[in-house]
Length: 160
Image (cartoon, rainbow, N blue to C red; front, side):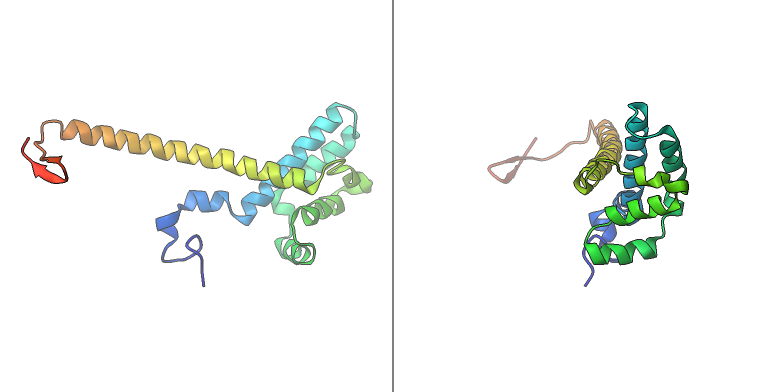
């Protein structure tokens, strides 16, 4: 049985295409890759890893380089996708430079950071939606500012 999130019937009642894309497997892995690249850049800047390794990690840590079928198999074996992503980056890098990928980091570092990145981007979508709603409500108030409305008193209709 499908959940309300992935149900063809219910999905647009409980979510939007933009939000579903943001929380998709592809987006999650893209956040992992973005995080790994940022880590490599900072570590190279601080001389923790070689700049050459950083450059190679940046070149290879791209969503189009990730084999999702292989990642699915690896995730089913170990229970989480971070290691599978890192292993793929490592294998794509030349001359063993990929061994510097994820240097000193933990799986939880990546997982938590990617989740916060998705929340950040979700809030941007929510804010844009709220801005649209506020504009619509303001327009309705303007359009109906002179429309008589029945009042209520003690849950009963009352004259204006």
